[in-house]
Amino acid sequence: MVCIYCGQKTKIINSRAQRRTHATWRRHRCTACNQLFTTQEQVDLAVSASFIAKDGSIHPFNRQHLLQSLYDSLKHRPHALTEALDLTDTVIAKLLPQIKAAGWSRQAVVETAQQVLANFDKAAATAYRAYHPGS
Ligand SMILES: [Zn+2]
Image (cartoon, rainbow, N blue to C red):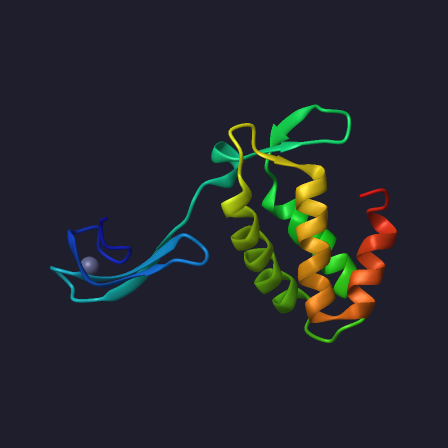
């Protein structure tokens, strides 16, 4: 990776694998200007995971769609966006061990999101269930 400040070479000075989210955090130091910056490596879910809709059609997994649905269910809370971002990671971490070659069914995604919300905020889980019936 090249330096975001001067474009010269960098060295990785620290790195941590986050097992839960399958992400890798890296701290880089520029060999020329000595500045520090951080990168995150994550699974590219849009390319690596499919979402199988109710009618059987297959789509790229859309993290933004999951985030939006969690956010909609948490709107009554003062820190809904921050919480929705964290819960999106939690739902995906719980979905990753269940991934099949074809991806995730809508039912697997909805059920996992409902379980995560039920453990976090009962009203949010109820709101989510109202928007995602029949699972
Ligand atoms: Zn630099």
